[in-house]
Picture 1 (cartoon, rainbow, N blue to C red):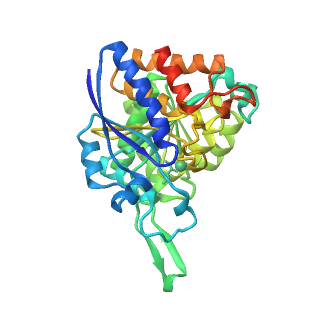
Picture 2: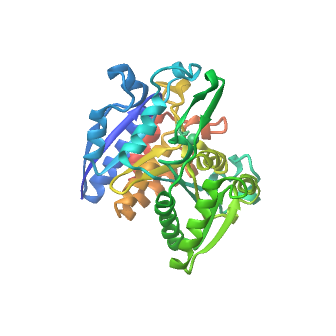
Length: 351
Ligand code: IPM
Ligand code: MN
C-alpha cells in the first residue's frame, strides 16, 4: 500500500517521539511491502514562532491531501500563565480538529500485564480493563459562542449540540460496540443539561438499529466514580466533548502510564493519530520521553487502514520491550532505563 502521511511533530518532546514512530513505521513498511511518504508540517508553538499562526493554511493543505496525520504534541510553557496571549498553540489544535472534521476522538484504555503494579489503582480492580472512549471532538462547549458581558465581569461559554452531531458520533459507538462485547455506555448529565437530554433521546432512538447492543445511560459524575472503582465493567463509552476530555485523562491513569496511551481522531475523510500525553516541556531534548504512546498511535494508524498484522507487529514489539525492561525512565522503577531514541531503535529492530 502507498501511504502519504502528514507529520505534525509540534512542540516539546513531540519531535523526539515522532522520530521514533517514523522509524518504527518505516520498519513496518519495509517488512510488509508498503511505501510511506512522510509530509512534515508546522503546528503549535513551533508554527507560531515560524509564521505567527498555530495551524497555518499550508499545514492544513498538507493534512487534507494526506491519507492520515501523525501528530506529536503541542503546548509551550510561555503561554501557560498568560491566558490573554492573542494566539495560543491550543487554538491550532481546535482549528485543526474543526477544519479536518475530526468529530470522533477514540481513546482506548487498556492494561499491560507487566505493568499492573504501576497503576495507582489496585491490581484486582484494573486487571482485564479494556475500554474505549469515543469523545465527540468538534462540538459542545469547546465551540459554542463564548464571551464576556456586563463590563467584562460575567463570562459565558455556550454548549450547543445538534441531533446530527450526536448521531454520527453515536453511530461510531454502536459500530465499535458490535466489534467488541456489544456493550455501550452513553455518558451524560441528562438530569440537568438540555444538550444531554438531546444526546440521550438521540441515542435511544438509534437502539432499534443495533438490537444486539446493550446500552446503558449513566450520569457523568457517577461514571467518574465507577471508572476508578470498577474500570473493567465498561467497554465502549460515548460522550460529549468536555466530559470526554475530563474522563479520558482520568482513565489514562488506570494503565499506570500516560506515556503508553495512544489515540485516534476520526473524521469522514481523514483520521489523525496522536499520543494522549502533552508536550512535556521539561523533558524537551533530554532523550528521556517515552515514545511508546506515539508508536502505538502509529499502530492504530496501520489498523485503521485495515493493516491489522502491521499494527499487531508494533503492539507485540512494545509488549516485549515492557516485559524485558527495555523502557524509558518513567517505567523503569528506578532500575535500568534507556533513552527515547534507544527504545525507538530497539522497537524498530524487533519488527
Ligand atoms: C486534549 C487536550 C486539549 C483538549 C487541549 C490541549 C485543548 O486537553 O486533547 O484532551 O482539551 O481537547
Ligand atoms: Mn485533555
